[in-house]
Length: 154
Image 1 (cartoon, one colour):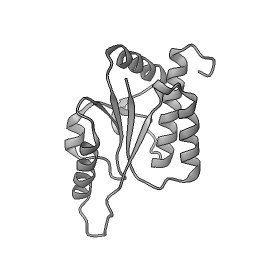
Image 2 (tube, helix red, strand yellow):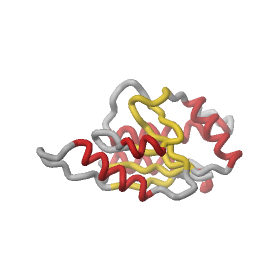
Image 3 (cartoon, helix red, strand yellow):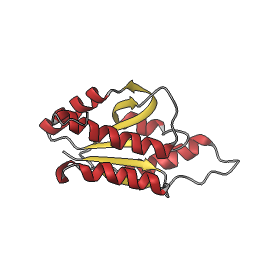
Image 4 (cartoon, helix red, strand yellow):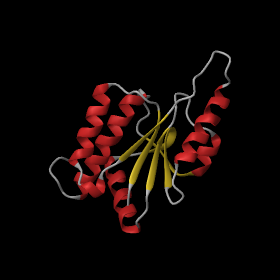
């Protein structure tokens, strides 16, 4: 089982890169998460939001591997707890399921991406800046693996 994070947005602040890397290197080699950064659409004042989401959606879908199941982070998704995440990871490990977790662009994702999603999760009812979402998600993945291993970090 492999987890990849496909995130719209590049050139994250150094603290985001460092924190993501710190949690990722704490994981064993076979648990480490691959981060794929996808370029956001350059938005002009006249660009339609749906056009931007469609372009970014095509970028997301083209970055997927054929066998991956998509988990979409979305404000309308199911609430997620660390325990739920750990249970999902255990199930994916047992089934050998590769997962792509999608962090969409500033305006969300296209309907096409939503239709491809195996699950839709919400990290919170709060709205977080995209750089912080990467850090929260990576920390929660680390915490879930710690919970699975009965590690005291959890």
